Length: 418
Image (cartoon, rainbow, N blue to C red; front, side, top):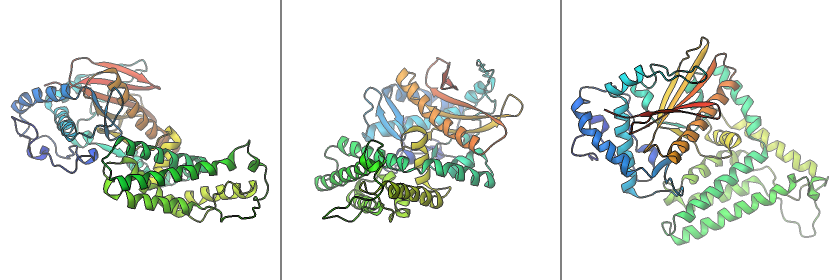
């Protein structure tokens, strides 16, 4: 399928349609270096199309793997818009590998207040311009070239921090609220029977989690209650296995909509942890000592069972650091380069923008900043000796270049041209 006309794609840039909603599989990945098919004539003929696509998508941004309208942050599910974004990203990626752009990058040294400069080899290789989805500690450690011994230390340090019951419950609630919002935005796209049943399950899960939070409330009677409440017609205590059963029912109910509901993938991810703690009690009527004991069991079981490559563990880490559960995604994985200052390293990642509108730019800056913050957190937790400088790079079709600073990190806005 040739998306871009009248010129033809090079063979390894031809588009394949892997499903309309999964943006992660739509974008071009290649480990090949540009070859003779990328002639100067091809770039000359492709640039007007790149500019036209950029103009058509000027009110569209990609946020954590979904396309949104920049004005109201509503999700875009129009296949035509998604295909345009695919074509735009593929073309932009090809242009960044062009000889002209590489020469411009090598000659561009942007000084900042901290005397930081651009590494001359930044994004020069094809595999440094590939998309990167961070969804496990293993991926982060592979990127940072952290040793096996250091990885063990990272996991042992992180697990006790992110497996507190309040973090665990908070992440589950965030996923369920996100799923509920997604279902509401889809209107009639989900079969009525499935939608109604899924809504009931999500509501039940949220009510269940909200009820259990009472035991940790310092103002509640249960906080000072030493022993469980005795009831005439007592019901069996709840367990985390009850939530696991509801999550399984949710999966069965929305199996046909898995590709268009991002948070359903997170429901699947969290089942790993739920299975490990399924026999742990979770009841607001437990006494204080028993409630603390059960919370301790949650932390111990999750810390012991969630491995380095666990997406469940990574989701908890994302929630712990940023209060959300989405995986961090960037358009250009970049790499870790030799720093300008002796004994330092410079980490560069990048993103392609549809325009230089402020909302688009700052949305991308915040996304890159979360990924950079994640890298720094793991780097420092691993006890790496070198100082790690962090840079974010943004590209758009235009003429304005500038440097931005956000939360102590530096971001460079570059232009794409012939």
